[in-house]
Length: 495
Image (cartoon, rainbow, N blue to C red; front, side, top):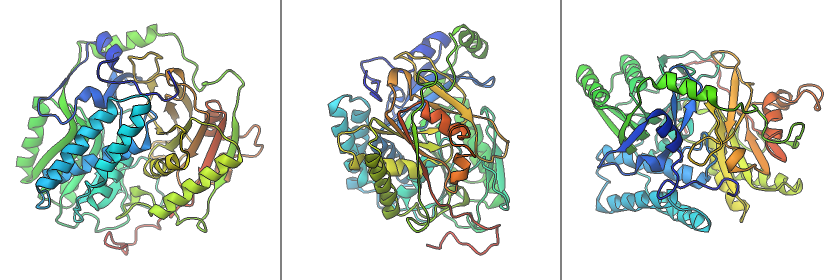
């Protein structure tokens, strides 16, 4: 299998089969679902005593390197689903037809491999390009860390204000709300908007996550937000919705209690059933697996070249993180400028493909947008996107399992819960090994944060791990627009 070759979900091995068989996990797609759930996710084992399994998305690119155009089209399509649920007057017969065409195109892309896959994803991008329906009075909230990029893509599709929750430390910026994600390895989320009026409008509040299993996190969030500023309309959106009948009833009960409307939409809808004693059985299964060397995707001692591309505010406008709230994403011309500089450095260094562009934890949207442009600047080369993550997942290198290889390394960002381990997946094993990794730390990361003292011995743990996974690693350092302490003078209506 070639590097980053997709494993099909129709008429071939499903990347959830192993976990489904071993732990008696069953997924059923609802009859009215727009997509088969198995097309949208595989399964893996968590290293988490609260939940044994992980739904691994095929379109999110958090854990699986994925074509950036596919990621962006899936996010745009979810935005169109949301607009359709809002029953906007602009959703006429022509818009409905466009939505149906884009939906069919995504299924085709997910089920296509080899040379035909590129054409299928190109067709998907063309179909998704016309789906933008503006809902400028909406407030879109994405969940850290997994859905920060997805939420931005939805907000782009709606032309709406966007903010995501965060686990990053934000000195000088007070949290206005917080909520818990009970099953997560890192449970606490904070909201740190710098605009005190971010929630004051009367438009719909849109909550975006990658998947809903119980919906408890969403219920906690709506309660928190409604206590701040009551709203009449909430839209809850995800790539997949696998809530039980009882959990769906909880949403209806909450809406009745608060006197509001709560509408849920997802690309894939269904149910999941878990085998008895799944936590204990998963632990026993993991204990039987052979050990996998953490952080080693190459022979011991092998290390790729490290280069840095440091851009300043003379090159692009400083990047303001969406954790603080933004009405618009970074300008397209700045995204193109970053991609152009990266492409020039790759050529100058004679870096070889396949190319893996990696965001870091919550920093997902700008890297995937750059990767999408970069793919056009490197014709004939494989360019894939994924991200580092906090999620501890068990790698098993087999075709019917979603996570083939793992890198682990120490965190380097300041976070609310302190330092810890971080991971990057599927840069080794069945998926192969990328020739070059292009890494995007949080904007504001400086050269001193990557190289500490002696470059031969003081490399940041993240950079060290990446040089074990590829022949070349390019670390892209971008300027940050760090907001001052909340002063009440900013506005989401500002350009």
